[in-house]
Length: 327
Ligand code: DHB
Image (cartoon, rainbow, N blue to C red; front, side, top):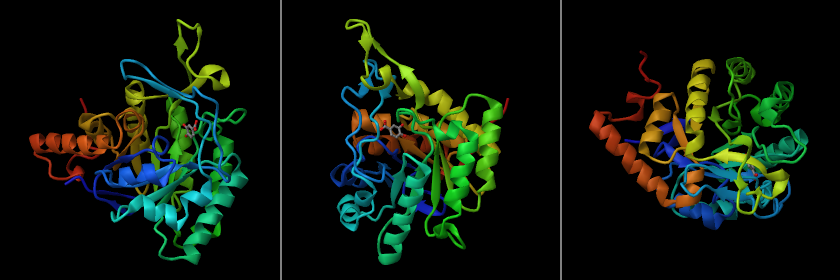
């Protein structure tokens, strides 16, 4: 049994897609919905649609161990991702949770998008938006700091977001926060203490987004592999798994138990998912592997995780979640 829940939202399987790859359109998302992915999470939206950075803006290392992207948030705009037609085309006859991701270019943009989401939910109570992931970790917008690395700004964003009417009383929807990776214990402590201050409004934390500002070089062309930002781009894939596991473990230790942790970063097989759950993840997102392999990766990883659980005699993910043993 791979079922779980995040922020009170039940998922039929604990493995689902990360926001980003293959999540821009309802046609792409419908393939996720048709797979064993436990949820469908849409592409990070901005207020208006935008085409993103010039190509090449993605790069995959030949051995498949690392990828880089600086896409610059190409997306169809928030109205598209909260439109009932998009959602019904995405979900088809599956009744999986559908979640929206927002990555405003400013705090005002994030507040505006959250307002739009609550308005559509008020206007049409049948609209199926199961949760909203607020991305505080996009490293690819020129001239903008990664919010999760600017603790004053992060606190201001969370304070103002959680003051919106949709989070007063019982929140209209579960809120997840997508975090950048941290590398130093005081940074984990600082980030978690800010998140804990707003725990009444935060349902889950998803760690990690890409490791920002990595650089891959084409030695033949003697040029960066990515065009935008001088080639500096977000690193993903198996190369980031160890950083992701550490972030999940630290966040699980430091966050209030009412906040679920979702593990994301370099998950490419059932063992990776198993390790994330041992570190305390309630669910696991898959980004780069979904990008390179396509939506069949969810079916493969679910059966791999089931195989590991069968071998170990575990019936449910609660049998091992957060139960990493100590020396
Ligand atoms: C992009 C990259 C990210 O890591 C992210 O969180 C949002 C957008 C991008 O480049 O499009």
